[in-house]
Image (cartoon, rainbow, N blue to C red; front, top):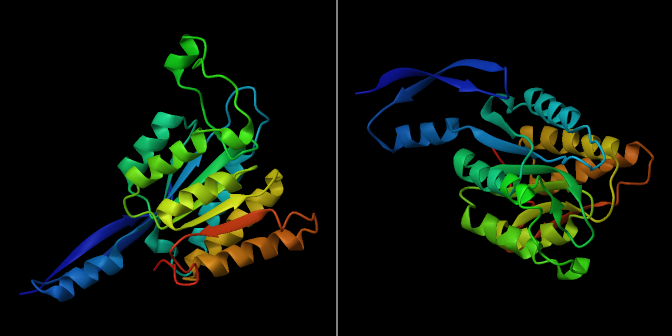
Length: 245
C-alpha cells in the first residue's frame, strides 16, 4: 500500500522551498523516489583570520546562493555555511553536514597551505612552536588531504577558492577525485565571478568540467587576465561524468 507524504526541503539560509509530495511504497520504487529527492548539499567554509587582507566572502556566498536559486535544480540544493573556520571547524563541518560539494574560501600561501583561523588554545600558548619550512616542504598540505580522505563521506567535488591553492588541490584530488584550485593570486571580484558561474552551471545539471569551463569563461569576460588562474585537478575520475541532480 502506498501513502503520500509531504517533505519540506530547505535551500540556502532564509529560503524555504515549500512542500514536495512524495509517494512512499514498500518497494525499490520508494527507494528510488527518496534518492531523487535527496538534497544536494554544498558546504561553504570561510576563513579570513585577523591580520590578513579583508575578503568579500559574504558577497561570494551570496553569489553562490543566487546562482543555485536561479538554476533549474535550485530546489534540490542546500547551501550550508561555516565561518571563521580553523582546523577543528573544518573537520566538524565535513562530518556534521556530509556535503556533496565543499567550497573553501580564504587566503592561501605559496606551497598550497590554506590560511585558516588559529586554534584559540594554541594562540593562548603563543603559537604552535613549529619552525618555518620552505613552501614546497610544508607538511600541512598532505595533512589536509588526509583529513579529506578520512572524513570524505559523499564528497564528489572540492573548490579551493584561495590564492596559491593548486598544490593543496592536487593533494586532495588524490582522495576526492575532482578539485578546483588556484595557481596564483586571484582577485576578489574574479573569485566571486568564477563561483557564480560554476554553481549556476552545476545547478542546471552540467558536469564539473563544463561548470569549470563556464567559470573561467566568465572570468575571461571581465578582461582582467585572470581566467587562466583556476586549475581543475582530477584523479581517477572523468570530470565530464561528475554531475549533480
